[in-house]
Image 1 (cartoon, rainbow, N blue to C red):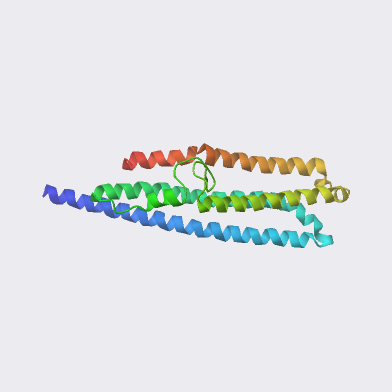
Image 2: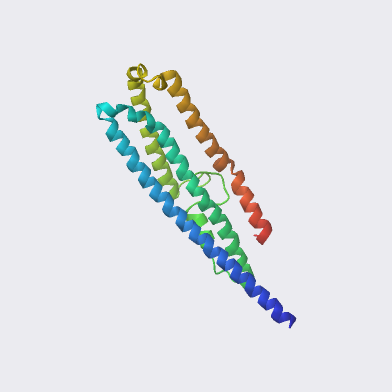
Length: 215
């Protein structure tokens, strides 16, 4: 009887972990989809803003573009935090299930560490700083470089048209616009560096699952 009870408890534990693993894998996939949808949408909106600003009556639209580019990059980085969450939890679950069944059947977490990026590990968004040559790392560099180029283009264009606009719209004067843009940009960048490079939230999640599953 005792052995049957132990076996039943073991099966319940396995079902619970399998259910959680399915949930995390679904979360991982779902947020990747949202991430790529967001990058496509933000790219389209950025190009539309540039096109509209080339039309003289709407040239001031370009002033919003540097702010939008920073927001777009930050929001995409936010979506990836859910992938980090799902990856860390999935890794712990797979290791625990392997241990429970006495066989190394679930290896997705090892493949992801090798092919995507390690968790937890110092990174900048999807760039693993210790192993930056993965394709998702290169893609992140490409996307970031494109964003920086467009940001600088928009900032230069703002520098050109601010003097003529400030006479009619004091909010668009240089003493207001540039400090506001600097605070907006540096504030978001500082948070990303703290979150990803510092990695404290990632390490906290990793410790929670390690304490729970011993992995």
